[in-house]
Length: 418
Figure (cartoon, rainbow, N blue to C red):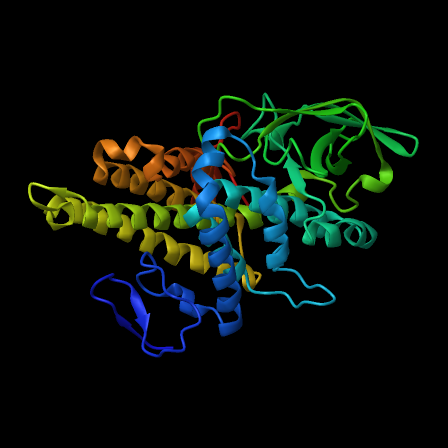
């Protein structure tokens, strides 16, 4: 489909009246057109759901820190969970489509995009990549229908970036069961998830193993974290395991080392780059609309050079980031994706996000700190996206090791890799 440029919005516009998906003003180069017509239709349904169902309640849910459970049936009706895998009744769709779905959700509410990403990304992917065929058949169909919601428990009270070097949560084999002891922190969906993928260290061989812990398991408790000022709608929890008994049938049969954990993280880390792109698109739309409507000194502030500089810079951040994110999705589809490529995308896109939300807040002036104008929600949420799925520092070191062949991580003497 060829495009022209709409002078009033600056967005690419289809040259035919048969457009499947209206271009977003933040998609300045029209990257959504890389999707097939069928995929554009799916994305259009997600956009309508986000704009009509999520947008009206996003601020209220964020302010109250209460999760809007009534949205889950609507998510389920979209049938977008597990789009990237093959199902008996549905072919696998491209990583570009699933990534753009994350972008669309983040454009309206990064909290709801995170909820969906934890369930359909981290939790479902853990079972899909590391579970046996029986385990996949037992859990994945219900997760696809969102009859069972998933969570992913890796981070710990005393361990974030360094969990690969030694999880404190332990698993001990006892007959046909495993006994889990320890704690997890920052676990999204943790307060209400039906299935929690828990990563623990086997005391017998010191290897990291994965377990599916079901809601109601004796010895397992989840407590909502309070006082969180980013992604407030996401129900992050502290999880405690005190002699929690998990059957061997719930041990992920192909999760036997942290390398298996990292297979999941490699896929989802690239997804955070798309969350960042979506959040930037959201604040760009808000800042541009405000600049056109807000009158100071007798004219719209959009007519001032400094305001245009902010808007163009935000658009530039979006355009550079989406180019990187699109290439990441293409590499994932081609099965040539590496950890360092995921790390670079996550690093750069979230750095750009931090700058973009600050500029959008500045365009709105004092009004930018009012929740009713929404920019402050994105401003705060950006801090969480910047930190989770690998901090800027850790992703920097992953890429640094790749390009120099020398590991520079704290606690390890510098050495050449490979």
